[in-house]
Each structure stands twice: as structure tokens, then as C-alpha cells.
Image (cartoon, rainbow, N blue to C red; front, side, top):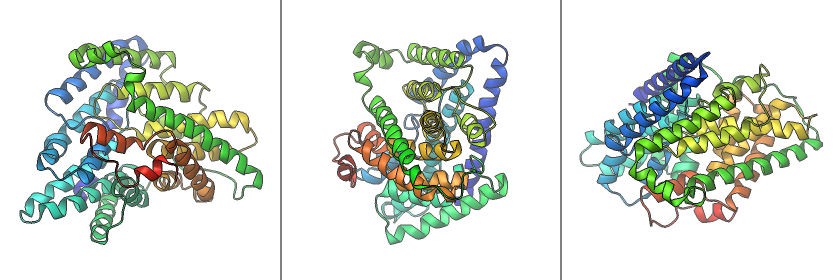
Length: 420
């Protein structure tokens, strides 16, 4: 099954890229078409998700957390996993990308991997309860590993973000799944760096401590604001409009689509899609980003998430982090821009997820940034701690709110919230 997870991850990545490029091709030279295509795709994805594929909404990581930590419930498993949810995840997110929404594919790949691995428990009728947790963790880790070509980050993600422990009986299943899904991805997609090779100095002077601290503070503020916006939409969306969202999903989808299209046209297309291209080009030095990119991309991601369709946050978050690096570079112009990009991508992801080890390892593996290990580690730890003072970890909070409300905080939440 791990081989199939790797195959699914590669195919899903290709389909995602194709869907987004179809959107770009359709509006090339005719940006006004986005005001038709984006609302139509958004409405289509909303209707698919609400009518036939409940449980496939969002990134998918909160669903995995809910299945791991909520009281065992076969009804919950059937609602959040299975082939129906996999189909909904793929179709709904591809429709969103076909409309240029700011969503990623990595979170959905985690959900797909967990769902596929969890299906194998049906072959063991006498050990389902015992097998569910190891299989979910293994599938989630394999999905992230194959999505980013980051095997070490896949294991750390499952341990730090999902499990909160490292049980010996889980280790072998998880690592085996990561290895074999990674081998499948390697065979089909090649051995690639997700964001390309980062070029930074071999050594950093003592003065680099100040940019590290600045990047950590900047990304902590931006990440905490993002979490608060997603976790408490009633604070900034009028109650009547929020009620309208549930009563009139078609009109809500049109509104979301128009807002995303407007942002895209206003920024000359910079905010459409996951933001992968913009972040990679900035890191490679082949293109620059507007100083407003981080803010407009942040808004586009929040608005896209409000649609309630399948779609991830990983790639857009990394892209926002890259945009924040241009702000840091305006303050510390002598610091290498690629180094600041790596720091801000790490810090922003750590602030949102409050999983600092996963955050710096995933960026390190995506960029081959071994020279940046200590600065990235410091940034991620500080950003996660600062953000944790004002907001809980996003995925865990979404899991408790949407899938098992009223459940006490997960192990580790209290320490995270206190900034420990």
C-alpha cells in the first residue's frame, strides 16, 4: 500500500500542476475571464464537497489528528476516510486549482495517504482498533514524504504534529511506509529538491543573530494572525454574512471566487495558485516579488480557506514566508536574500503549525540547506514559541472544533499555548 501512496502522490501532484496551468492558459491575455472561471470553479467545488464528499474539506491534516486523538469511533473513521473521501479530496482540490484559488496539495496528500493506508485495516477483522493508529500515522508520513520528497520531515511530521509521541510499535510501520512511498516517488519523479538548491555563505558572523531574531518575530506575528483569522472568522466576518454562507453556499462560492479573482487581477496574477512558482523563482534569484506580495498572498489564502473546499496550507504558507523575507531584506540589506527566505519560510510554517522540528527539517530538505540548520532551527523554535503565546496550533484547533468539539486539549497543547 505504501507504493500506492507514493504513486497517488506523484499522480496527484501532476494533476494539480496541470489544473493550475489550464487556468493560467485560459486567462492568458484575458484576465477578466478569471471573474467567470474562478467563481464557477469555487461553486463547483463547494457543491461537490457539501453534497457528496463531506469529510474531504480543508487540508485533511485536522481529520487525521481527529482520528488519532478523538475517542475511537468507527462512524468518525468512515466519515473522514475511505475511498469516497479520497475521490472528493482529489476532485474538489483540482477544481479549486482550476479556478486559481490559493490552495496547496501537500495537506490533501497527507489525508489521501492516511486514508489509503487506513483501508488496509479491513483485511484484519480482528485487529482493526489496534492497527488504525499505526496505519494512519504511516500513511500521513508517507503522503508528506512523497509530496515534498522529504523523507525525514515525513517521519518528524507524524511524530511531532500528529502523534505527539513515538511508540515503538509504530516506528517500523511508519518508516517502512515512508521509505517505500519515497522510492515510488523517486522512481517516477526523480530525485529533486522541491524549491531547488539554496546558495548561502558557508559561515555566518555573529551579526546574523539579529536578522534571525527579526525573522522569527516577523513570522510569529504573521503566523499568529493567520491562525486567529482562520480559527475565529466570526470576529471579522459579520454574523449575517456568516449565516448566509451556510444558507446560500452557491452565492458564497461566487463571492469567494470574485474576491480571489479580484486579488489575482490586482496583483497581476501573483496571488493565484499555491505560490510555489513565486517562492522558487525568488529563492533562485530569477524573479523578484512585490513588497505587497506577502500581505496579498496572506489575504488570498484566508479568503480561499473560507470557501470550505479541499485544499492545503503548506505551499501557500511557505510562499507567504518567502514574501516576508523581502520585508526582512529591506531592513537587513547586507544579509543574503536566500538565507532570509529560508528563515522566513521556516518561521512562518513553525508559527502556524507550532511544530518547529518539522518546519525547519522540511525546509532544509526542500532546499538542501544544511548550512542553514542552526539559524533555521533557532528561527523555528522562537517563532513557534512566540506564536504559541497567543494562538493554539492551527491543525489541532481545527480538529477539535470541526470533528470532536468539547474534547479536552491534546497532549502538548497546554505546553505549546504557554510557549514552552
